[in-house]
Image (cartoon, rainbow, N blue to C red):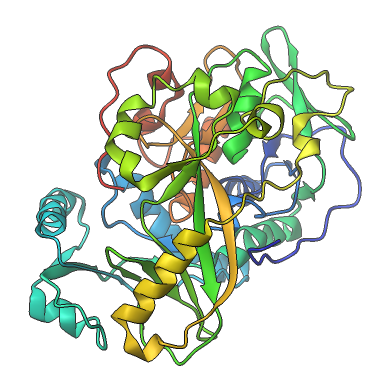
Length: 443
């Protein structure tokens, strides 16, 4: 594991049945596990690898309202409220701090976009403070750039990716939830056109409700059952530095890098918007749906073609029976290479911007596969053609912060309770019914 995680102990015995089975132990699945357990249900969480081992431990750790698409604002507002409650509620350290976030830039277009976004966000009670050049400089002491301005979002914060998913699962276990790692779900058992169980590599668990929160693997899982789910996978890169006397006190975005200071004096760092495409069969299948997004972001994307994604991983061809080895067992943990050019670019940008960090060094770097929808809004939704299945996927590189809200919404949908927010923007049907999808907004 290049990205650090907290390890979770498995439960003892795979049960015959459950009220709800959750597939995937990233932040969305872990949060749903906690919320459903709090509702008093018998919950089983099944993970092909380890809790939080893929993108949920490989992200920046930001928990932000700032620059969200308007459709996500109600959900992130609830998520931030839950982040503030979950530490005491679970008794676990999730690393959440409402520290505020700072953005600084020398680009007039950035400032104009932030001003426009802030006017929209006021309708939701979200605070977003535009900074002039002097204020941006004051909030980035020690920086060398002559900023034109920036924005501060003082009610936003950050959490610790290596702790969050695991902490929620451990807390849920204490309340009776069961978790099984290194245990792939090969598919759904279906009776009379509805979900009646899940077939795992260890056997059948009977249930009438399943939440599939399998990240980049969700589309492949759905295709096994004739469910079309347009997801595009992009590989992002991040790295962690060795501890150093810190020069940056708050999570900071600049055009050259984005970073999150950690308690031990290290930083988690990435370069915003950069990614790599390694398409396989799935990428070709959904290329048309993603063409507009690709055109708008192509300058920040590298393209690395090859045969491997067609044969192995979430983009691959393939069908399998429930008594056969599945693609999920062949790749327990998706661990793509970090792009070392991006690592060096981010490192050099930090050193240049902050001379006090001249001796900053990389401790670890990693890649992570990000599942995206064509409109960059997640799917948190029932699937009309298969009653009992709830999808929770397509978080489009901004799912960690929204995770507690996503978990609660998926739990509400699975139980038939009144949803915590209007689920309409996250409906599955918008991706397959010919809807005119709105272009992605700020993310």
